[in-house]
Amino acid sequence: MKKVLVLCTGNSCRSVMAEALINHLGGGRYQAVSAGSTPTGQIHPHSLATLARHGVPAGQPRSKSWDEFTGQTFDYIITVCDQAASESCPVRPGPAQKLHWSIPDPAKASGTAADIERAFDAAFALLKNRIDSELP
Image 1 (tube, one colour):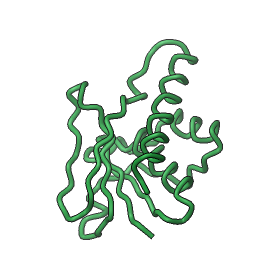
Image 2 (spheres, rainbow, N blue to C red):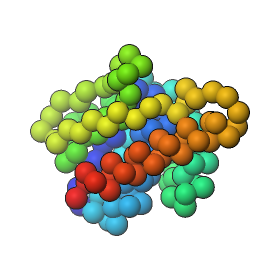
Image 3 (spheres, rainbow, N blue to C red):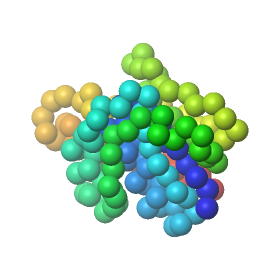
Image 4 (cartoon, helix red, strand yellow):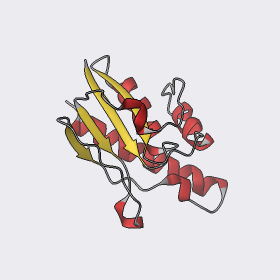
């Protein structure tokens, strides 16, 4: 089983959805966890709603610092921050294969409830496509 660490800044949306998707789609080949460089301390409720809407079990996600994983080794470290918004995306040293997936932050979406749902669904779809195409 390959170990995957998914990182973003707040560990409340994208990394949480990626963790759940990898664990769900990986069919036991992957064990994913997620963390943030500056965790918000809470999981965005739309992240959980999006996972549920698409039939992906969320598990028991918790917004946490990447410091919890110091000293652990991973096969993959995936960052999911969107660089276009001048967001500080964490970088983790080590021998793991590093992947960067620039996923727009759905937590920054505004507008109607439908607009926000579309933003979360778009992030979900981008993550799913990257997982399907880049994790063997």
